[in-house]
Image 1 (tube, rainbow, N blue to C red):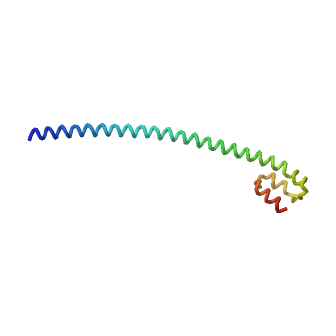
Image 2: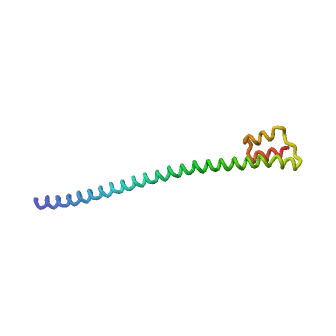
Length: 109
């Protein structure tokens, strides 16, 4: 009986130490994953900042393109013989008309 209890105790001791090692491995894995989450969140924040900067740059370029189109289009209309409404330049200069809408307006004239 005593021998049986000693062997069971030895087996349980090995299982206990094995489970403790497994728990420590899991804790280490959780720590690594948490560190990875922190690193990825930093990357996300940096990319969000880049997106804001790039959107601003795109808006500035769109404004520049629109300004150039607004300056050139009335001359092209005059050269082609198309008569523009009196407030057409105001509409173009206000920035409310996109290039596609502008083309549609020209086709209607």
